[in-house]
Length: 275
Image 1 (tube, rainbow, N blue to C red):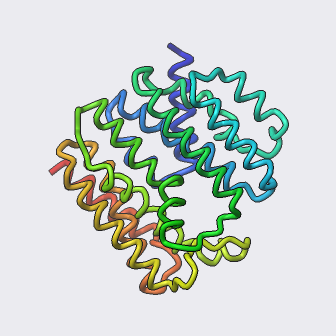
Image 2: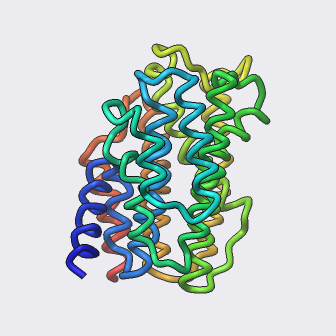
């Protein structure tokens, strides 16, 4: 029991350290649902850190991501992951090195879904690293954003079904993740270009990416409206309203949404939930 409590605390501390945006809504979820979503987020953050690592070579990233994908296709022992990461121990962050621990946090009946979605994401990321993130068309952008974010929406929908028998539209669920990612692509445009990566399809201007983000966020709005139950509804509304707010701030020429604005928007949702 003490080990379980310690792992829960360590997972929530890691969640706070890696994503304040998702820490807030996850912390409001009830027991069982909270551990499931926290586990899913940390598993996916673990592989995201591999894809985005500034010091690892493309060859190393591809090897790690494909190997993780293969391992997660079956019940995986932490020793297998640690053996895989051994040569990269000094490079990889703690959230990645503890990928096996984050799976232990999750209730056994939903962990196969989380492993499957994370495995798909990991292999999809490996494919895009091998392509050098060369996004030529909107179809390429859809494929990339599906693997790095749309799968998050799919996985969350499976968790909602598992916990509360809530049915959602798959395409809207994908758009939920895809829309959040599109906002990140706009926000991180200068940084991505500085490291030689361009997520804009050939010929696209900023206005095209804003339009792409809005189309997906509109579907994400429909996704959230279809969820009948709190606190899942509040969980989905928080990152969505922050994405809308960030898009408006970027369009107004600001670098990002201010901390004060984040606090105001989150408070707006949490107070509406209590009302």
